[in-house]
Length: 162
Image 1 (spheres, rainbow, N blue to C red):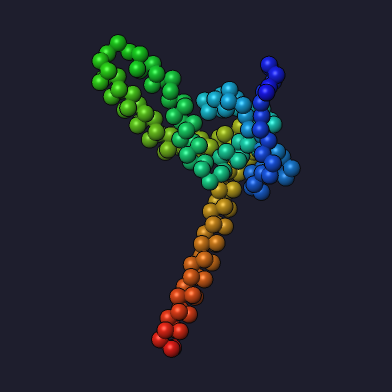
Image 2 (cartoon, helix red, strand yellow):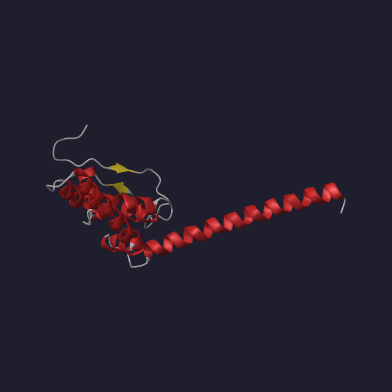
């Protein structure tokens, strides 16, 4: 239960190691602040760790697409109010969504990096964190593939006697 005028926030208990500076909590914004954030606005300083988490988590690209769709709701809603047949309105709305998503995906990395800079981080922080996570994941996958190849080779040697 929240008191009128107070913002409800959730603090994640154990933030991921890459989510922000040491000791900085990840505080999720309230729905109205998230809506402002999705529309391109900045968040208060206490949400800084969450912005970095939002732009570097494994689903950062899906979160970007969701924010883009939120941004498109106003113009698409206005298109649907135009005095025309429903077929034309829906075709215009669908074309607008498709074109908007093409541009959004084309500038996805730059847009997320801009959000991180607005939160007070240096340019390139989100990309560096995502790259580091990718490298670690690739290293784990390489080790897993090597171990699987060694097991296959051992089974082959046991079967053929070589």
